[in-house]
Length: 150
Length: 150
DNA sequence: ATAATTCGGATAGTTATTGTCCTAATATAA
DNA sequence: TTATATTAGGACAATAACTATCCGAATTAT
Ligand code: SF4
Ligand code: SF4
Image (cartoon, rainbow over all chains, first blue to last red; front, side, top):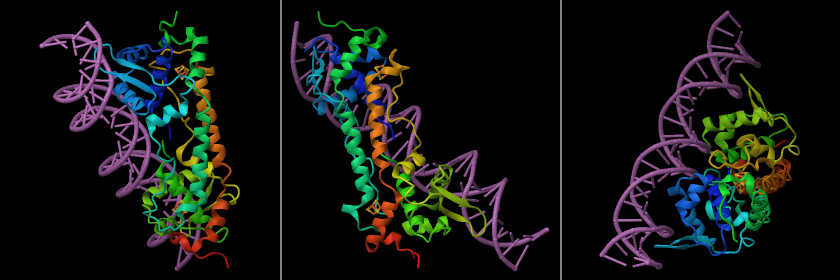
């Protein structure tokens, strides 16, 4: 019961993109290098982000990635769900157990509410806010030492 | 990012206990049989429940398990945490990434809030409520067809 | 054409979860 | 005391999920 490490890579990768000049296209290898991540796995993560519409990808020479939405549109929820998918937190295999409640079971309903509550919290935090923090505290985040606009 | 199947076993096992006469001691094998669960794994689950103080265990002849708290004291949060432990939903390995934010990082704070929110929802549902539902809908839950008080 | 780059699939390595088994400890009863 | 019933706990095996690597195909700029 933990977010996978792919979420961590995604969050920090997106933050790295957000810190570039707007519309700057970044190489995957640069993202990986800056944060000491395995580039081959990060590639998979970025493919998921692209599919989810959080980043735009460009193939070929001078290709790479850039954000597909403004940082204030991208929330932590978008990121985690892009990586982890949207399977419910609790889905009992009633195959073992004969049970005809199905739709209106207080247990399942409770988990559904809890899950909604979890993601609605994550939805409140945007990449913009993370970026703002990163700008304020840039000196303490060595992995983010990138040239910024201007 | 899903609650493990052990949680499902635990919830339904506790519900089975709750449906017995108060202070009735139940054999693990009966719980497993009623729900067609692997008894050896259910044993592990019940050991965790015992450690967490949700059930009392009795060894030896006429031994078994019973609830250690009244059904209205046991919440879904207690159960899930007894099984899954309390490791945080998100704990980035800053080993890869040099970052000095640590304590006051908006990302980590967001996940912490989200996690609290998740568990606070789960805390609102008690075994008593599940039991009441089970009593109302007994006919639709074949795995729970047990003799009840009286 | 050539070089640079992402895409997608296959696959391998690693870790976590789920399940089994065996022995020890404990409790009851004859 | 001995036999029997039952949980505790550790070691282990099987399975599944996650993480990581690799390669050929597609795409694009030069
Ligand atoms: S009681 Fe609810 S969670 Fe359990 S098997 Fe029935 S429908 Fe599923
Ligand atoms: S930015 Fe926050 S989550 Fe990322 S490495 Fe720094 S402290 Fe950890």
